[in-house]
Image (cartoon, rainbow, N blue to C red):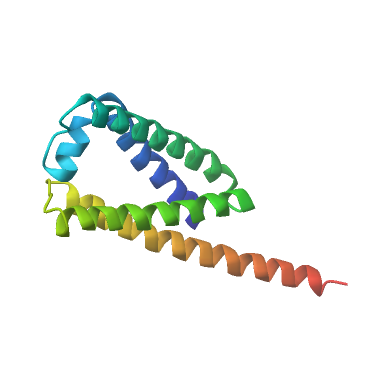
Length: 140
């Protein structure tokens, strides 16, 4: 149940963010970083990132239907890597580049929370899998 909720929350959040980047890339960039994109190339890159986030959202929603599978665990591990990197990049934007929009801290804290949720979910699934494997090993 823990991974199902994590995957669905991620699906909705990243899917909505991806849709915003795909349709109006300047809007989420302005919210996050306080500055608009300055040319067609960054807008195109933002739209590609938006498409990737939408795909990530779809994958998370689909995996939420089979949260105990190895594929779902692999997706959560991928989300963990994504959330750590996203949080680091947002922190760098603030501390290293002096960029900040009204949504930067919301996004940064959100990615940190999702990172911790991924770790907790993977640990829980790992312990559950060990318990199940142990049951099978001693069942003879």
